[in-house]
Length: 323
Image (cartoon, rainbow, N blue to C red):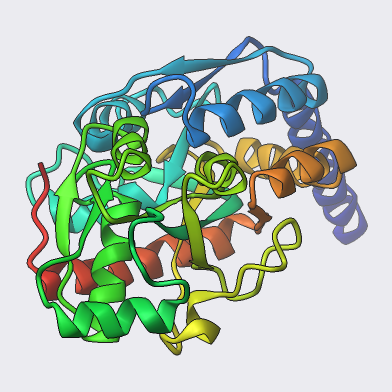
């Protein structure tokens, strides 16, 4: 009888394992919607489309990007958070959403409670650029000018509370300088006015700023990453150039509605890891100055939580308000 019970238990265990494997193989059963809470053409959209195509190849189903821009990323985030948690809705989680947790106290979603975090994907450093009319040719010279003329120099951003704005606020706090923030409705208009000389400087995305630097329309003083970029090794980090410990980057990752089955999360994470190992994908990110940051779901979850705390402190200390 004892042997019979052991055999029966073994059969049940094997059957359950086979069922779980079959379910994992069955996922996904239809096209996957990948919500991006920003308009087409930006870093989040470009990365999502590149990732979607390769994920679709690995999953055997189309992954369709759905742009739902507006409200600094909150419209798309709320839509994703309230979508069915069946593994067929993904969301491009960004550092801006981590900041939004503090910028907007009355959000209709919670970044930690309402999402299952699948994997980080990439980190995008920023480039500190100045118009040629600014005399400073190094970060040290810029700091000296800013301290000699407090409140005179200004910096542009794509909008209050965004990555470029917070990069400027962190720079001000760590360097002890007073720069005036000039918010715009998007990176394009902001960068255009820096190129035109209407604004003195900006913390801009590398891919957006580099062409203007190469054309001589802007001067690059430093990058916000921990290490110099492989594609632009001649540009120092802001930390080594004068603001010790300065490091900030915009990051992008993949999340899903809370309650998404663990097997779906595991499958998605495995496929993202495979995509990250493809040379053409890594090369494309490197060309934009980005760094791959693929991580296990639990690691990404802890990272998002730590980013909420980090951005929250900076936002509270600087008095930054959401638009």
